[in-house]
Length: 281
Image (cartoon, rainbow, N blue to C red; front, side):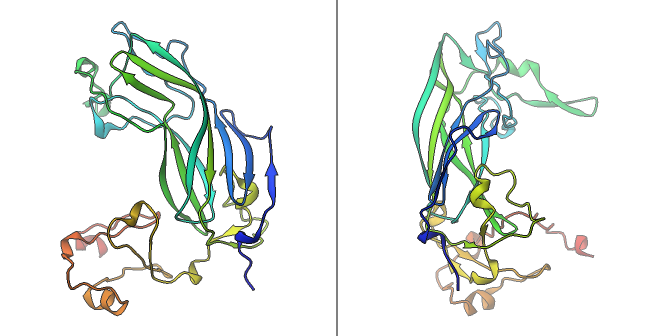
């Protein structure tokens, strides 16, 4: 018999638990978590230059997004959270504490040039016109399956350019995450199975197992992927698979009005194979 998480009401309150130096886990249960992010900034003046541009770098910040050269250099904190479901997970921002710094703009993402065989920032590119872009304070990053555990990355951007000459720098952000309908099972992991280590809610994750064998080809709904028709395909063995017209039709997928150029395939982890057939030899 399978016991699902929907019947559990146990709540663990950990007011003093610290996931890392900048994350305080306040509450953790099978229904959700509440935590605070307190950024540890690396400079008191946020690396302010003579032109009044700042970059509020903090510990464990992401790398620059070099696809957005010339735009505001936003960095984020990625917080790994074990989830009982691939869909329906939501969050709300409960409290914030911040400082508005006047007379400054954010530094832009630099261009990279080759110098002595290495890619380095182009200092001359720092004079480009600033391009301001709106960005969410908190948002979901990738959600996927790591072996048999569903993990979602919650991304927090702790500074914002709120006007042409004002940057808001957050000192504290409290977030509540509510989980979607569970599709995981309660199982006891082996003593040497540490796949759950590193997520913010380890106490719950150690007993959550996503059983791939019990999941069949099914349409995914109630998610960011709800635009269009999405199908999950179970892969049980390593190898190269051919997803042709006959295969998709045999699974009940209606292709009568589908342009094959619009079909896309996504996976959780792994890497894409080269389209050059000689690399398979």
